[in-house]
Structures are given as C-alpha cells and as structure tokens.
Image 1 (tube, rainbow, N blue to C red):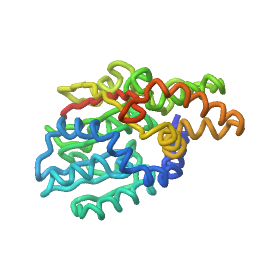
Image 2: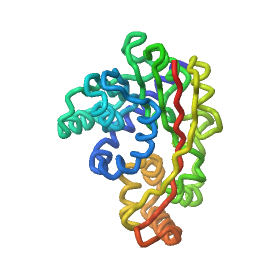
Image 3: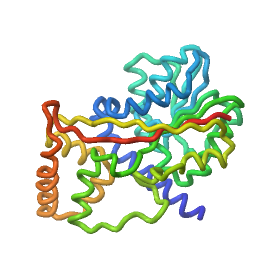
Length: 281
C-alpha cells in the first residue's frame, strides 16, 4: 500500500509540474472561475488579522493570496507537491506586493509542521488528488490549533459540471476509455454524498458544515473552451494524447456541435457545481 501511495504521489507531482505552464498562461481565467469556491472557503474560515493560515494544494496561490491580504498581521503558508506551481504562486505574491506569504513543497500526507501550528486551513480542489485522503485529513487536523477551522472544496457530481463533462463525455464515447479504479485520484472522486464529512469526522473535526456552490463558466466561444481544455485540463489532455489526428478532429467536431446548445449572448455558458465542507477542531 505504501508503494501505491508513493506512486500516486509521484504521478500527481509529475502531472501538476507538467501543466504548470498552462496554468500560468490561464491563471487569470481559471482563478476567476474558481473564485466563488475560494470565497466560500474564506467566509467559513472567518479570517482574523493575526491568523496563521495553511493553504494546502495551493497551486498558483489562491485562495491563500487573498487570505494573506486579510491576515495582515499573520502569515499564510502555501503548500503543494508541484514545485513549479509554487514558483507561480511566489511570483503572483510578488506581483501583488504580498509580503506575509510563503510556500513549501511537501505532501499533505506528511506535513512538515508541528502540532497546533495554524489557526486556519484552506484547501481548494485538492482532496480529489491526494494519495490517501484520510491521512491528509488527519494531518490537517494535527497541525490545526484547538478551536481552529478547516475549509475545503471539491467538485460535485459530474452531471453538475458540464464545463468539463461536455468534452469528456464525447471523448469517452469515441475512445471507450477505461474508468479509473475505484478511489483513484480524479475530478469526481469526492463527489459522493458525505464523503469528505466522513473523513473529517474520523479525524476529529466537529461542527462540520457542507454547502453547494453552483454557477456557470463562461467561455468567449468554442475555440476558447477547446484551447483551455487542451492546455489546462489534465484528463482531457491525457485522453487526447492517445488519439489519432483523425480521432482528435472527430472529437473536436462533435464537442463543437454539442456545445451549440450552450451558446448565449454572453458566450459559451456551461454549468459547474462544487461542494464546500468546513469544520473545527
């Protein structure tokens, strides 16, 4: 089992380092897309100016950078497996003149911090990719101070996330891809009812709340969406890398045809749905 977790960890590190250039290119667009989930996390955490905050799986920096502007007398530490994502986070902090922010490359299942080190913990869209989600929850609980709060977000059911299933559905129909093994890292791994709540309860968290955050991702047009899918969304890129040129074009044509029904005066509008779960120690 340890070997399996180590393999998952290395795979995730490789994937996110590989995609870091795409995430940097699309940072403004993706951070605007994910902002409602980050905002909901921040509301649940009730940030105080002197809070010491851990932002797990921080990627290019949010919501930790926004939290740092609220915890003006405190500090935010952003952690991630992918060092190249952390370089972008540090660059973003510098561009925004945020001085109370630092990064640390590490695995959430082995956090390099002492017990009771943080008042608050945020984790936006990270749990789905952790090697062992229970150990990750346990570690977050360990480094949280008594009375501290943790809040996380994960993707909801696939049917509520047309922003990606609009493309993945066509890919799966044409390529007959094997689904990942049960429990393997993936977009909708945590969509099951009460899954994150159960993990948190086992860790010891109390006063657990769960809420939905729903909205629409608006692309300028189809080409805008297709480019984003092929530069940022790892499951799409991984699947299409196995397709012939002819198959790639066939899939693109079918996705484009299917997307017409979502075209509005604002652009191409596709639903998203996430869950935000919070608790206290």
